[in-house]
Amino acid sequence: MSVPRPAAVIVLAAGEGTRMKSRTPKVLHELCGRALVDHMLASARDLGPEQLIVVVGHALERVTGHLSVTSPDARAVVQREQRGTGHAVRTVLEEVGTISGTVLVTYGDVPLLRTQTMAELLERHATEGNAVTVLTAEVPDPTGYGRILRDESGAVLAIVEEKDATAEQRAIKEMNSGIYAFDGDLLADAVKRVSTDNAQGEEYLTDVLGILRGDGHRVGACVAADFVEVEGVNDRVQLAAARKLLNRRLLERHMRAGVTVVDPDSTWIDVGVRIEPDAVIHPGTQLHGDTVIEPGAEVGPATTLTDTFVGEGAVVRNAVCDNAQIGPQVSVGPYAYLRPGTVLGRGSKAGTFVEMKNAKVGERSKVPHLSYVGDATLGDDVNIGASTVFVNYDGVEKNHTTVGDGAFVGCDTMLVAPVTVSPGAYTAAGSVITDQVPPGAIGVARARQRNIEKWVLRRRAGTKSAAAAERALAEQEQQEKNQ
Ligand code: UD1
Ligand code: CA
Image 1: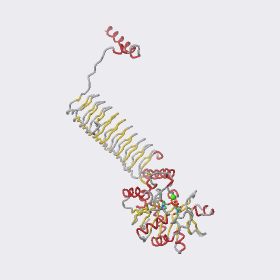
Image 2: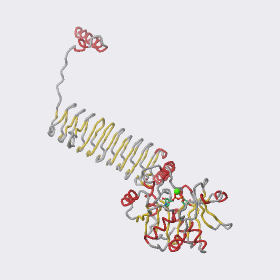
Image 3: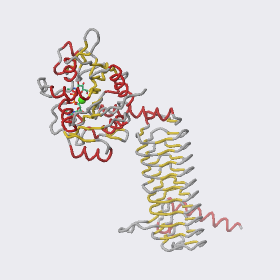
Image 4: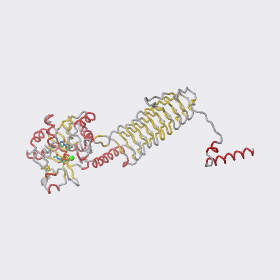
């Protein structure tokens, strides 16, 4: 479908959204990794409008501050007082001047509206040569919405707001989505003639339809195929419902592109996530931000990845990873926590109850069990024994540890940074390593074992331990006699 580029898209987002009961302005509430308003702007942007305009008012600084980061291409127009949707559009045209060509008006709280649906509206508007075309929908319960009034032939006459409607009009199930394509020149003229003579004392943009029709212009309607798309978010129940629908839509796109999503109902994904074919996502997984999952990787169950890269064929189970780079064929978890700056080389492992931070791990190196690796560089083919701690914090500063290629760190080693275990060096289990271990040496840093004979018999007499010891000692004595 070839759709004419609109001259402008105007996104109305000045309202407070009181039903959210939130300190955060409604349009900044998030779903699938993006604020409500940014969802609308992303779909609008895909229409290639010459101008992208957002009407802001409530929580002005926060909203404009947000938009300047996420949508620097959008021009914010300030509507100081929210005196109605008609007033909002009038404010825009007074500030930027009349916009000739097609002007699409939409809202900042309609995150499910697809570019495709807006394109269909624009196409209808163009082919019918309308002055205005409104996007409508048949809904089971139109309560709260403006209703579409049509004559016997089906031609659109006007829109009446619920509060101004008669009982008969309220029975109409065709609602106004609040999304329209206008002829910009006609809009500029008509919006000035909108009155406030209605139940809410506001300037209704909806009145522009009746005005243009009264002037003898063509007024059309485009009925959305799926009413769910045009439903706005007004409270947190609707926000959750919209999130679920959008999540499903995103997952279906991935599944159709060759990704296995074992349980879409328990998998949550952000719009910015990239997943390559033949990746498998297991239940209970959340993929956030700019996470990338390469072909054949397996993620989950119960894994949360944020801005994390998972290389080809890697397996990440029951893990929480934040800003981590997981190389190809790496194994992570179950029960691992990878914090920012973790970089795992090809074929390496961050195993069970392992935490890493700012740690570069070389190829094939393994940290299989119960360890903390912070502020460290590990070479290739390193083995870190269970319960090893990289003691990186002295209470004031974070210090770095280097472990060379092929080094073998024994279980329960404390590597007190800054310290180096050289290539090919070992540390003895239970050591507290404070000084460099030279290549090929073993660092032993622990007290020698001393046994105090029969201590339990004397000091724990009468206990099960003492009884067991007595039996064992007697047996030993018997054996010695027999020899
Ligand atoms: C509006 C329509 C109604 C339609 C419904 C669809 C009018 C008069 N009514 O009603 O026919 O069925 O949307 O959701 O247009 N806004 C501003 N500035 C304002 C007023 C509103 O920017 O002065 C923005 C709001 O932030 C919101 C949108 O416009 O995003 C709609 O405003 P809202 O007050 O929710 O309109 P409704 O009464 O729901
Ligand atoms: Ca609304």
